[in-house]
Length: 152
Image (cartoon, rainbow, N blue to C red; front, side, top):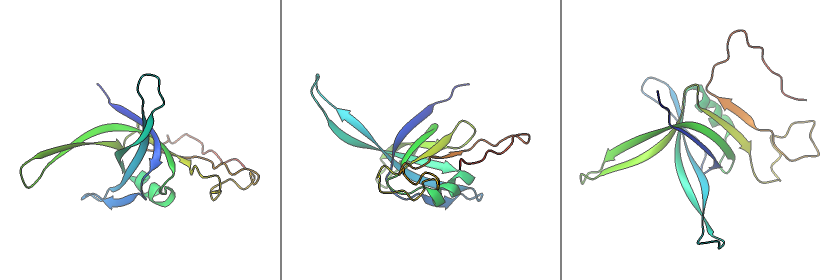
């Protein structure tokens, strides 16, 4: 068995778009931007944004709709899926999608990189504007697992 795994740390390019598949499964569509630094032989390079399409499936999609916002940093891991479509003129187009679904996938909201945004800071950390990351995973805990409490 082989598995293609993609891990990215980037910024959300827009608010998550929540839709539903024909079977009723929630699907959130995201665009994530990462930086690519181009340089020539030891000289400082320029930064270019690379855009990635991401699909989040299942209950995790509804959680993202409520908690993820444009500009927020995310860390995600998922599988790579290739899609194609044919235009009206008959040309075939291909693109890649990072799919977050199943037990090997996860998405972590790292918070907003702006220090003035303390909306999600824990109450007992009033002196800090660092936000606590929200970990969202598709893995289902076992029945004998005990819930963990948030600090504070």
